[in-house]
Image (cartoon, rainbow, N blue to C red):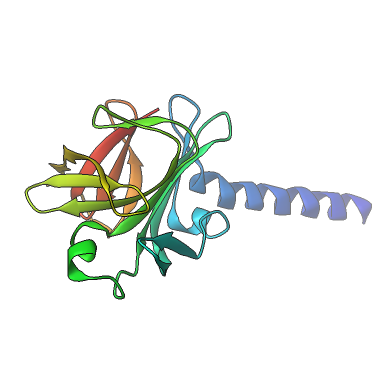
Length: 172
């Protein structure tokens, strides 16, 4: 009987590992891509931007956990209470615990507003709504089942932040 109990515990442990392992997809440099379900405990349920607090759409979020334990996370935000001018360029909230580069532009650790805007561009703003920089975004026409927002590993190294089929590449 004791042996059956031990076997049962090991079986439960193996099932738990099998369920958790796919959520933390390791990247070549030891970083793991996080999906929306991974961020529900990490990302704030609401965020401050331009004098207002808006709920994050955690079902439309993604991020990276680097080997040293630092995170980069992004989520779409409900912008219904913002003016049309702000909502045109502010679609999401971005949290970087470490300095990164987005399409070659340096971004210090911090919290930012982000948006994919017309003309295949991606804008990063401070929480006051002031533009920090704009970079060109790319389109992944071959992407199967695009989501409103997600992070994926980039085949050339680093990561891609997607909004539908549009993406920008970021590296640490």
